[in-house]
Image 1 (cartoon, rainbow, N blue to C red):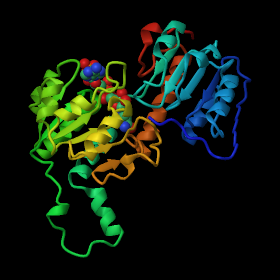
Image 2: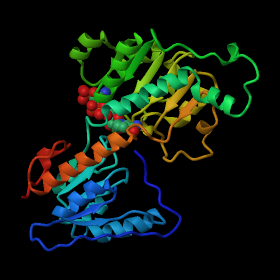
Image 3: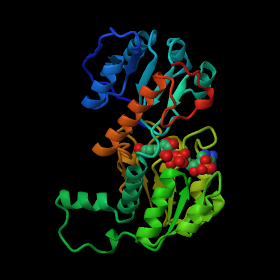
Image 4: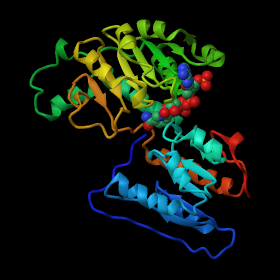
Amino acid sequence: MHAPTYSPQNVSHLESGSASLPARLKVVVLKPLAEDQMAALRKHHEVVVLSSYTSAEALDAALRDALHDAHGLISSGLTITPSLLDAAPQLRVICSVSVGYDNYPLEAMNARGILLCNTPDVLTETTADTGFLLIMATARRAVELANLVREGHWKHNIGEAHFGSDVHGKTLGMVGMGRIGAAIARRGALGFGMRVQYSNASPKPELEAELGAHRVELDTLLESSDFVCVTVPLSPETERLIGQRELEKMSSHAILINIARGRVVDEAALIACLESGGIRGAGLDVFEQEPLPAESPLTRLPQVVALPHIGSATHETRHAMAQRALDNLLLALKGQSPLSAVNVSHWTRKG
Ligand code: NAP
């Protein structure tokens, strides 16, 4: 998930709908929805859209101001702090346009009875496509070799120095076998004849039966996988789950894929490991700091494919995610159960 960037101009954009109907509540929108979705939202509630700001401080001030009497918030990558919740005494629900919710203060929301909704399922297949794109692109050196063509350096037939490695028939190690992990594993096992092994909090017997997958300890997975693909959520338990010790367990021909969250992998350790040839390459959609600073070695190592956090970024899927967030919000503000949420049992339901 991105930390939002703010435009260099001090462009602030506030829109308010009418508050004529008594049942209308106030909703702050940080992640603009499609036009049809915004129209549906305005039909039911008073809407305040906060978009571009010169700085995080300017956004924080505007957000605090807008939240003081707000009942709902639609957001995405911004880190929401307990202090922001203190500025929002009437807040009933936050709907994130994302499945991951590591940027929300869940305990503080639970303590205040605020519901947190997310958007699982609708992004699973698209994010799995991106994960597999990274597997293919790193193994076959697609970006490096496409750049060679683009820069006019394709003068001879490609030789061994530019060969990649096969994907089909290799061993795919899934660190996390939830919705997205299973969808990537399915692509590997059924589409590419890969052997699948996984480490996960709980066993997945149905996936073992479907894909012939084996659950193994993380160390075993690291030692014996050609591709190690990280799909666990970021949490205190998974932060830097893949550090120097774990990277050293991987084979020098293996490739690391991270489609989860940047902080699940120790980025400095990964850079050191790539620079010393400890592993063959890395395919990364997520980073400790986003956007990835231009000076990061990850931007220039040829064996790294770095994407700008585009796991779910297709027209269809982003629209579906926004629709899910909207549906969740409309239901929750009526006091009805949302389609997907992470803390319903702590919610102080008001109709
Ligand atoms: P999910 O279905 O909840 O899957 C997460 C899996 O991780 C679950 O199987 C869970 O085990 C396992 N897990 C959790 N903590 C663990 C731990 N400490 N050790 C081992 N396994 C652990 O979630 P999802 O929908 O697949 O999404 C996964 C993550 O992908 C999200 O949280 C988000 O951060 C990231 N994501 C990234 C993008 C992107 O644009 N790059 C897009 C979407 C999502 P159990 O099954 O036992 O609970």
